[in-house]
Length: 343
Image (tube, rainbow, N blue to C red; front, side, top):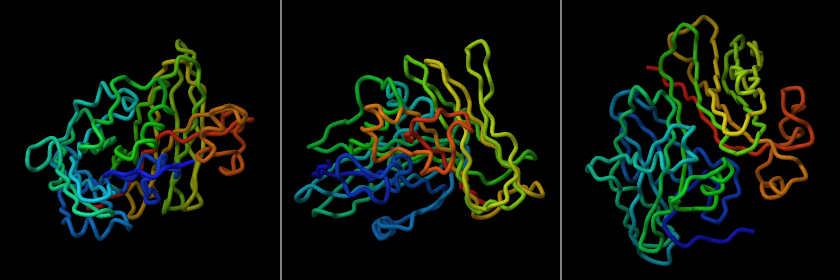
């Protein structure tokens, strides 16, 4: 059951109309958080593009980037508010205590963008873009979390950390004043091709099975794709590996998974080598590696996330063939999208 929201809100996806909770399972790529590199967007452009298509800009590593954020007014009348934007490494998202001080200032040097809506259903961009400079330690993966605070909705960030990934996803899905966007932008390639290193942690106090699905589009035939995590015998983590896969279909996906001990953290690698070893990624290529938690089909979790779960049938994969137990479903957690940005 969903209920309508009545204040300024930021969407989790293009299907999000402000109901609580949002029902579309994609809650990690908000279209209202727009990384746009050194390029600029006007307020009119941000309003006119509200229903799509999405603006796909690029993160200019180690230089200044414009991050635009917009909201929509569902309050019955005029209202005001502020947008705050934070960045975090992927493995720290469940710990707001570690990123709530990572506030990104905008072009007016304030740690917020002002919102002013004069009517209900009005799309209102922040008055300034946020100004983000990636450090050498942050790599090419960026998790942006935006919040809206108003006279009717105070700071929505919880005072305590989440103890599970589904707790964090729940928080995003249940809060129209919160949005989340992951970015991984590639404009040049080393000799070994595209290689993503995603820090991932099982924050639960019990062992948990996780799966990782790499979905690709416009991938040249003959590309070699691999998704893996290294074993750690001392921690009883046995790793997983798709092995190098030669791609024959330009659009598709590959799934792999393994059991994570309680509290265990590691790195998930996604690598793609393109034919001819180009210095830039082929135009139009996208790769998305999504993490998912395994839940028994008969569990309360499976019922709770019935609108989100991915089954063997929906994914077209026998789970036990890729290291995931049969008799259960997968609940999406987070996704990183690689966008090619040629010069």
